[in-house]
Length: 83
Image (cartoon, rainbow, N blue to C red; front, side):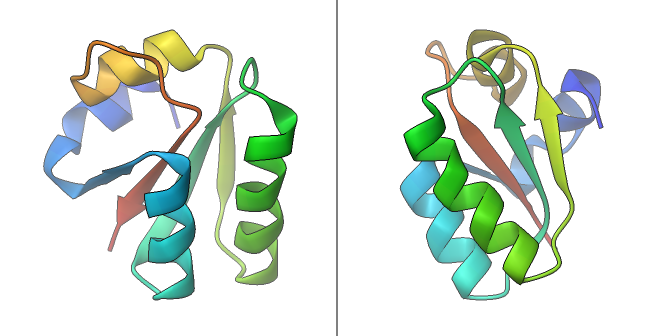
């Protein structure tokens, strides 16, 4: 999983931690992407829930680059890819 894949599936993205957590709980997610440079208090909740739900969790190095790959002007800590 890379920034390129995120950029290719823009219409299937859920951007942001709150929305990602909700989508995971609702069973709408196939993969989660987490930025390593984001606050771990925020990202730990997502990675823990993804692990509990057996959803692959991929890490990337930059929340700014992840936001750019999503087509937004700000960084994002987490992104989910919908089914």
